[in-house]
Image (cartoon, rainbow, N blue to C red; front, top):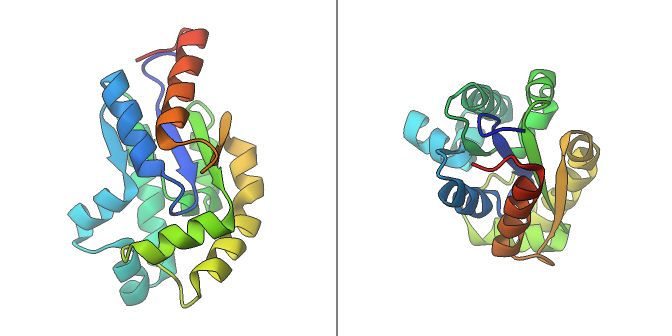
Length: 175
């Protein structure tokens, strides 16, 4: 891997993708792209607002487009990608050359994070029910594309970022 290969941080909402991506972006002096920030800047609405107003399909299509556009950027960014992108076969294919970092977390941990922030869509479900359902539905896809997997909250966001940086240093693929 070289510095022109994107780093994509994946996981369910609340796993810490944005925070870890920011840490990696700063340490590697790379641009950062975040799905949630993109939605708010481009569409003037949070993921939750888009899901409620236009539907989950529209939200997920916009998240997939964001990932695909970000993967094509140079210099290669660090990308905090929405979990829904793994439902799109094009996204899974385009992730192959990237370094994909999976932040895995228990549904209980994720439910706390979902409750804490209103920008996260709930799709009409209670946070624990939603987190459990999404984890069950997407875990196999995460495992399929991930190069590195870290358990949250067992590892802090800073520990995850340090482990990714150590991996890049070991493989000679730094920023």
